[in-house]
Amino acid sequence: MYMKKVIKYVILDILKNRIMIAYTVFLLAISLSVFNLEDNNAKGLLSLLNLVLILVPLVSIVFATIYVYNATEFIELLVSQPLKRVNIWLSIFTGLAVSCSLAFLVGCGLPVLLYAPEGSGLMLILMGLLITIIFIAIAMLASLLTRDKAKGTGLALLLWFYFTLIFDGLILFLLFQFMDYPMETPMIIFSSLNPIDLARILILLKMDISALMGATSAVFKDFFGTGWGMSISLLILLSWIFVPLWWSVVKFRKKDL
Amino acid sequence: MIIATNVTKKFGKLAALDNVSVNCNKGQCISLTGPNGSGKTTLIKCLLGMVVPDSGFITFNQQNILHHWKYRSQIGYMPQTGKYPDNMTIAQVLDMMKDIRRNDKTELDEELIDTFDLQNIQSKKMRTLSGGTRQKVSAALAFLFNPEVLILDEPTAGLDPLSTELLKDKIRKEKQKGKLILITSHILSDLDDLVTEVIYMQEGRLRFHKSIGELKEDTGQTQLSRAIAQVMKSN
Image (cartoon, rainbow over all chains, first blue to last red; front, side, top):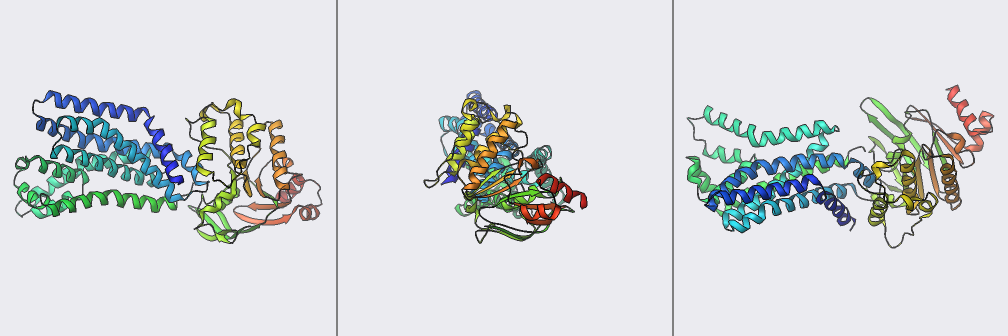
């Protein structure tokens, strides 16, 4: 009952936020220009994919972390009221997730539906939404690891850097080290350790250009292309939401305000 | 009504609360005093569930507060420094709290909003308010839901003399209704005619919990401020 009200206040607060509006407009401008520049919509989707997988996690994690730090007063006020702590925390998460997803849907979802309303486009929207929510959940956890706002924001940036760059570097390093061994199965496991990679693979497979990915792609297609593999990867992506969120709830319950 | 048993809380090495046990009952008006950093605010935050004790437990009407968060609907809390979302106006904060906390049973007590004349400045943003005006908003919120227990942390700090008197009148009125009132204040002369009991804390430990008559008798002083000063000197 009161959870709905808290969620409402958070969403109204974020929708008025200038950064959120700028993010939506920016996504919209990029998506529209990408589709208008490329004569082929599939190509447009591919360019958009790379932008989305870099920009969306960055904005989601940094915005959510800063928002939680700025809401310290709001949280303190709520905790002294007859509200359950867990529900306060989950309401803030829900508010953030709903409003950031809304921004993504307007900024990126609408153009994709307009220009490329096929399977791969829908997959891009679904993955964009999941990535948004995953990185908000990670931000909720990051903001509880330190009380200092500057440190927390730095940690959020570092996590984004890790998932978009460092992780792939480590994978490449491992691949070169173990070149002589069959690496296909370990690669599938590795890719599930990074939600961004997992999302990229799922979208590329839908685009039927997986041949571009080289030798491993055949194995990827055999695993992720099947309904079974697809369900498993969706389950992994969902656990990328729930595990950080659950961990943050555990920490928030014990936090001194 | 509120019973704390062996509550201990450590921040790092510092023991903010060390084995504190208190018993507060309906109709009492308790002054929580002690030197700076003696753990008064930490104790209050423990009672409110804002700080989770390392050991010991607190019950409110015989229910452990750890699992029964609803007890807070019977508490009005006025924090030491009221922190509110910066970009909300006074009216929005009041409306939001009503919206979140109100149910059909509670009768709103908007007397303090009138006495402090908050309607006239209700469209001001919280970030532009002076410390005293913030205190007025905090006080109005604490009394708004007509709670059974009032916990006031330094209620008169930052208030002008007139507002202090108005607030004291309100506290007196609520005390006569038989509510439990817990006040921390360094300006002890403010409390002289209000308080029925004194809890004295030092370095996180509970030194004593006496009725005001007992304390005055023990120290041989007639004024609360002098009695406490004597206690602090002799320690």
